[in-house]
Length: 298
Ligand code: G1P
Image 1 (cartoon, rainbow, N blue to C red):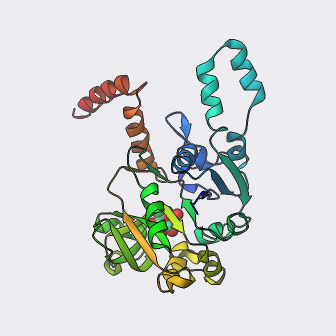
Image 2: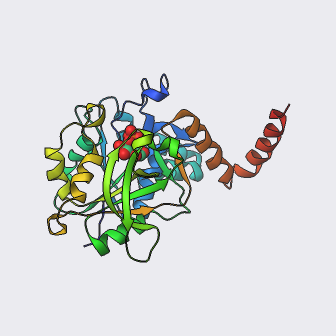
């Protein structure tokens, strides 16, 4: 059976973006003119995952509003004959089936994913983290879905990062899997290890295809790093389990373009890169960036 459910945790407090995130969820911060969360939902839908569950928390009501219709605004644009803006307003409503559940308490990524248990049931599903934007020209999720349907278990996305940055991520130990160099068997996982204890430079990035056995495992996972229930710890348990019981963890090494919107500097870079590539804004924006950058040398 094809996987068609995606879970997007969006309950974080967004403290790195204060004061912007004092009353606006960080997922609603725009990358050019579209909220970051919409790119992620679009990516899920493009990969065939048309049932999307957002795990939200308090003060996240605008997220639900964003995926809902706005009759007054739509009527006003329709009356003016502004079909272009009308289409832009409707884009997020027409994406797929977007559902919401609240996390209640921020007890970590593993705990957030556990809130999806009732909605997901007993089938494999994808998890997409909103801070990671994957360029739509580069394949990742569909490769992961294809691998999961072939080998079962769970599949995670990996990125080779500079050694000194590995302690910002979940880190993995891997073994080759078949002839495809970018597909690996994951034999060990550790959440944000100190640089000198990291088993590799392969970092977990925010795309997962999980076997439903993860829910049972998360129920028993004790708080780990930072006192939070870590998805990485649950995956470590799954990696050691029998495939017949839903065990086995595999990785797809991503070599494409990824933009991190969770960090202020990387967020700025993401906005510049996305704007440069936009057919409507790109040509003028690139010309300005060139001029601006030349002026920086002075
Ligand atoms: C989470 C995961 C971590 C992963 C990262 C990717 O951490 O716990 O394993 O490497 O996302 O973005 P967070 O960035 O939420 O602290």
